[in-house]
Image (tube, rainbow over the protein chains, first blue to last red):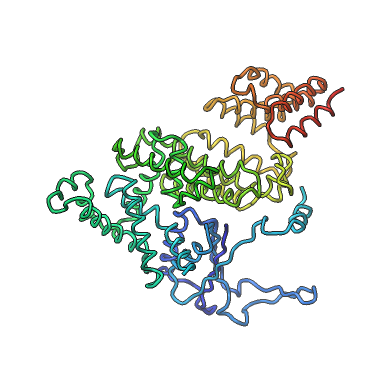
Length: 128
Length: 418
């Protein structure tokens, strides 16, 4: 099974640059995940103002620049891990060197989670 | 309560290998180390649901295991009078007084884990025993889980584990990772175990059991751990590369009704790009190290060639044929030759492939294997030798044990018959 762990750092845009100390602690944690053979990929994300938002309303896309309304509620990075149970993923998340932040742990859909007609739709549209 | 048990199980999965490895270093006996670790788990199951999981659960388990070890020895022997004798016997007490798990350096933990892997995969043990012991002590799987994965009874697996630990104890196998040339000698038996675990999961048909995919993931996890512990060994990276790329095809290998789909017929859109990228990266690591690629590295390079073709028709068969050629030189086997014949046939025309088949057609190892006539039939058909092709497909149909495959082969025999 795969789990995505989303990190919500709970900081404002101007505080987005992490200190060397933060990075060192986080690197140690990432290394632990890697050494356990569970880490599939990870990334830290630049502040929201370097990105943007595309919102859809009645099928129409609208692009807006950041910053977002709730600056503290944005994703700051993610880990994609392989774990043997939800509890194991949660245990790993709780070992993250966080101070005041939040990690959301979400299980990734696998193909066999879908019904047959959904699988068939994937098959057709991926093309052979 | 059930939640607490599951949380403890998760901690156990994460900590058990390091715990057993650290204890085995002290007591020089993996069987005893496992018993001590289990004692600590039992204590955790009693304490944690009420008190909560401690901040450093690994250190808690280790401290508890050490205390249990001393209790055990007090119970089992007349501690006061036999202390010295026991200490000599196991080296345990002396080691325990000095060692402090919490202070153990990362490097030390790594060494212990590596020693545990090599001990579980010791050449004294049968393949089955190595696989079971590795899943048990490195993977933290329970006996019923291993039994389910290998479609064996729990009693069989339990007995296999008991015997393996007894064998290691009686032979007084030292708890250490081999170095230098001994490491080169023993590494293949470790890699083989990881590969066997993967194949056990990979070979089964889809939907048969969720455990199957778990086994593939567990093998990948073990391979990646090993790559972290032995980063200078190209074949470790080669194996990881091979497994990552093979695992990338897990979703594409079976059709809706569980029918197997051959590599060239798979929907490549269903291959997992993340695992392909990870496999390529591991292959690069193997290639960057000194020396030519070993058998796993070459197989990974072949897998990477397939992964690199967006459509089956774009496959670089010339390169694949060259890689099989290299593989057949370092690890000759009839099956490798057969695959080489397929690749050569694709790259240089059916007659070139048939010439290679000619060389292996009397191999005893392939005598009852349907693949030989099936590949030969395919090449003959492409060469326009229809009646010979039909005869080969019929022969292959007689030999295969798979009903669906037999149907397919008989159909091809019918189509090619003049």
